[in-house]
Amino acid sequence: MSRTIKVLLAEDQSMVREALAALLGLEEDIEVVAQVARGDEVLDAARAHAVDVALLDIEMPGATGIEAAARLHTELPHVRLVILTTFGRPGYLRSAMESGADAFLVKDAPAAQLAEAIRKVLTGERVIDPTLAAAALAEGANPLTDREREVLRAAADGSTNAELAKTLHLSQGTVRNYLSTAIQKLAVRNRAEAVRVAHEKGWL
Image: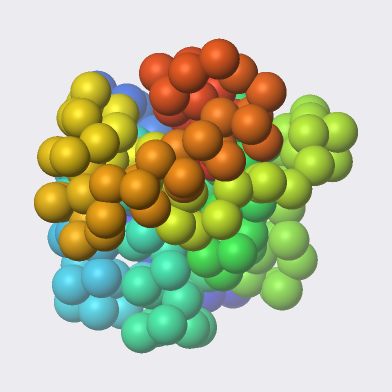
């Protein structure tokens, strides 16, 4: 008899989390041994329950699923990482792969497909939603530098250049230059549009 696969489920919406746990619980070789609602609880839970696979939602309080995946990849490299998301943004896929994720699936994938992905990543396979993979290839790489992304993220709340400069410990001129370059790269008219477009593409 094959060994039971121990799974950690990280999802901040309790109804979605419980539904996923129930569906996976129907599989004979899969057991959800831990559930968390915050990204910053993932590493401790994975350690405590000696999990084989971590199933991570992207948008969670405390830390995103991609941030949690990167920590797990560093601290517990034997744990396989499956990113599950509602948001089919090409940039998210690239970020997930860079963080060490082994699989990237959308939440409306059939339960059988999710269970099969869990089995496949344990054998060393990488599983990516084909529609997302095609979109990521078509979209191309994130054109923004780390600094440009940092400034755009900080600008999302409507902060002025002076406020951004203070928050990021940069001069106002430097902040202005980063914003201007980001706006040009994204072919938009202003910072608000730059934030929106970058967010929609999963580049922030």
